[in-house]
Length: 485
Image 1 (cartoon, rainbow, N blue to C red):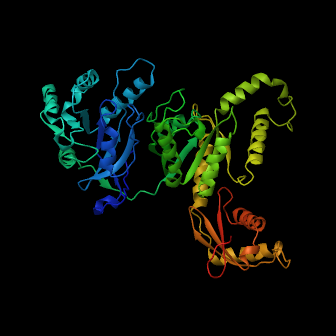
Image 2 (cartoon, one colour):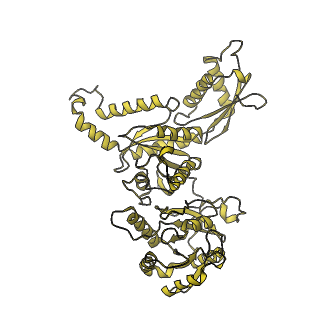
Image 3 (cartoon, rainbow, N blue to C red):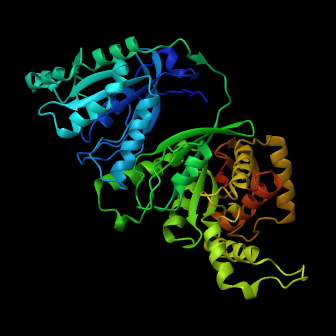
């Protein structure tokens, strides 16, 4: 499936092309050993902070992809993990495999080296890239102000016809590199597209709950590294897929742990980036380890999504493992043969977990709870069907006349308090926005308006006007537009 581009670059005057949508974009991969400045150059070319940068070598693991405009031309840019001499079965080996896979499919590869001594890893990587010489550009980074350029020319001894001396951090000579990128690419297959706006899904949760496994299954790729080592994913990995004629963008994020356990700068930035994806998404899929159950950290993540008005699905992952273990332990609890009224054991487990989650989440009974196995695909169809329904509800708009007819009925069914100090009137309502759904109620005597009655109206709006699966933001104002205290 061709990539699609809708780029908005902050604080930069954009060419008209930057606001269009494209497909079949040429792909440019940034490659090199750790800490040579690949992510810094990626962010500079993209004109925003997308990849995490840190002095610690090996921060980037999964390839990070984004669409951008270079000299008024649309390009797909990929930042890869650093090439390291790695032992088998290590994270570094998995990172290198992802990097090589990205290089093979790239239209152009920017090999980034650091000014100074060429290391054994540089030499081995250059040797590994010999089959791809026809699509290779060599760039020596960290040469700001001409620093160490005399040493950098030694790179020519490896057979490169041309070498670019750049500073990814300060921008020295990056313009020349950008022009070379455009000169070397073929844009003949690039097309403008009018494809539908995709549903944007963010996968959030604690480390090792199966986010990357689910992302890879949905996108039919191995873009995210899957490992038993918690915290493997650091950058947000973006992928896309289609299902039932609906396009999706999925954001696989770093696992979120309690602040007290976040000790490294890298993990701090990873977690912050993961939380920020809530603002970029329509729906949050909260991945919960079915064996471990809901944790305090899960509740905090869900509360963040709820407050932003995002759709929330709680995916109980590793459901196959949980039910298999329970089968072994609880065969005696299965429904007796011929007793059709007895509840199957799996349904009992799900009901018990659902009741527990609803007890812990008093405000979020609307959020669907779906058992899945990201590994073998069980429940994934139901998850996607639910996401599509939620997306429709998020984008639903209720006419003002219909909303106020319903409001009048609800006020008659259960009038507001009528005491001398508690009396107030709800005069009318409007829907301010969709996705998130934001309703404004206009009332008299704002100080008397109580949350209990607003909750009653919120539940009525959700159940009777078609918002049963999503959170609703309800704001109360008086006739002059002031908010309730």
